[in-house]
Image 1 (cartoon, rainbow, N blue to C red):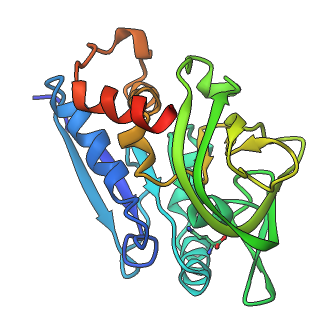
Image 2 (cartoon, rainbow, N blue to C red; image 1 turned 180 degrees about the vertical axis):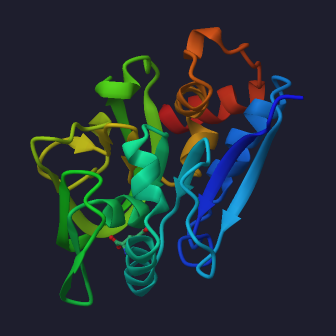
Image 3 (cartoon, rainbow, N blue to C red; image 1 turned 90 degrees about the vertical axis):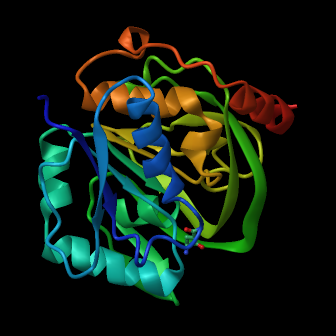
Length: 239
Ligand code: GLN
């Protein structure tokens, strides 16, 4: 029997505040609906971070929680090894900030993992509300064609360096920093975003892109799934 697809849910005990654990559920469900065996591995603060999951998700969290997450991920460097090996990593909000070079929490500059060329500093007002963008189709997201939709809620302004590309070009909302007109990050096997929702429930094509990368195939090769409720949700959110 083929080995199940392993979806690593990274530090849900600190990065589980905004419902982004749902991204792992969506990935598992979309695999299972296609007859692909898949399981979620909850990787908690007390666990070593495994380097051999097929894909990883990280969610949002409060400032103090993300400082704890950054320290743990630096101390147990499985995610860095997985990224070096090209395994897809999907990171949301605090998860994205933690994967960058530095972020600010409670006025202190904190080192991130440096997996993406991005730095985050405080914004003057909280970015909160619907966010939508057109995919940039950079790097591993080249197959994306559908508009991206989510709910942003952050105080961090994330500025990308030359090694990072945006995930989308903003059509609604604030996005990474309120100035550059872009949302999210694509770099190597990492796709990161400020979109909560959870993002993969609202953006099934993005979920399938991550699944396809984990299965070493293309989105076109995955059996299409007809889920009218998701289509209705997208229509309603993107109108
Ligand atoms: N604490 C971070 C910020 O406010 C991330 C918040 C989040 O994950 N929603 O920018």
